Length: 278
Image 1 (cartoon, rainbow, N blue to C red):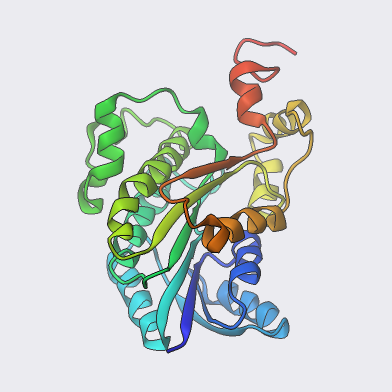
Image 2: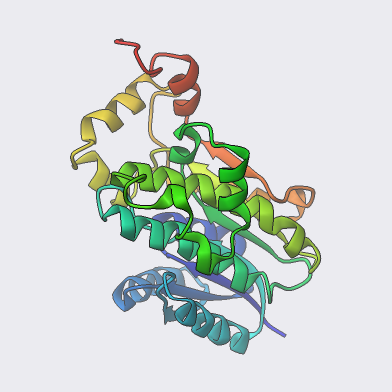
């Protein structure tokens, strides 16, 4: 039976990961917009990959289930790359929570039901989750364990608590990492693994939106004052994903890998620390 790699959100990072983990397998590229999936399919097909496309709205469980049915119709799902989402400059707090938090929880729940023995998945999260305030044990458990259909009803996620898009994004990305940790035991019972990657500023079209949006000065300051002093590339994320999803990463599951050039380290303990005027 053909092995299937499902890539949800086949943008620059999704494609970079797909190139590293999909040789000899069938790749299903899924996106909210057909034109995005088709554009990615042309690139990967020209590079020799066996590709098909599908439409998916991760904020809809029915849509995710339809994607799952399409993928399992192609063969045995052995890899999941979840790289879909919206950024703080692209959407309202409610939309960000619905797509980035709830949508990721649905994807993990549904794909965790079918992932093949020896399979692995990776969720592309964000450094932003590492700069949220410390959560209480109850908040952590709520983000990690609340069934997806009840997730947006958590008291601390209500509009009077989550007051702007950046806060919604940070909650969503912290929730992604916690969700991956909570799902790892369930995936493990199937003989599969799941991890997250939290990139910093990676030069993609989405990042370019941020670098020209209302928070552009803050993002450029993050880059300039980070220990590495530069943004990342999709291929660098692809390299980490290849480790996590391949045999060399066989002992790694339920983990979140921060790769942000040291921005978070600098935020907590260096030049980017709150109150530091440098």
